[in-house]
Amino acid sequence: QRVALARALATRPRLLLLDEPLAALDARTRLDVRAGLRRHLAEFEAVAVLVTHDPLDAMVLADRLVVVEEGRTVQEGAPSDISRRPRTDYIASLVGLNLYQGRADGHTVRLDGGATITTTEDLTGPVFVAFPPAAVTLHRDRPDSSARNLWRLEVAGLESHGDQIRVDLTGELPLLADLTTVAVAELSLHPGRTVWATLKATQTHAYPA
Image (cartoon, rainbow, N blue to C red; front, side, top):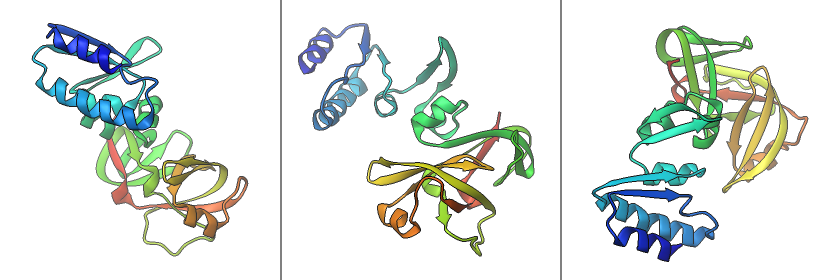
């Protein structure tokens, strides 16, 4: 793959198509090749089109993203804009955010399922609300917290996610929470356990739908 990339870049083409250029590489090699490719593309004076299913490749290598779902374009723009304002569940999962759609009335967003989320933005009408799993705090008992958002949920599953544990929660507001292994052990989390989830309004991001 290194040779194929070098051969493609050496001819200084007017148009370069990269179809999953980092697929099947081991983690360390992928990191090195991605960094090298990023440097070459920064100096590339023509047009490069990258096709990938890896969100990290897309965010690192692209200046502009076009996200295609089921054969149609669902969102396009700069990587920073898309990662901050996803507009579909698929994109939200790619960039690692919880995403909801509802109707805003000031700082309160009422979701289609009936749950509400308090945000810092003052909006009216249809909106999206997003927040990272790491922003969610879990408690065994109802907490005396200053957090504006509080839900009673049930653990549906747990899985390793990098150096943390991702907790899948169901209930009034299904969401994902990222915790350390120590926190998971202290809370004695397991499927079926009931917990309280809190989220500060400052950790949310609401924007027009």
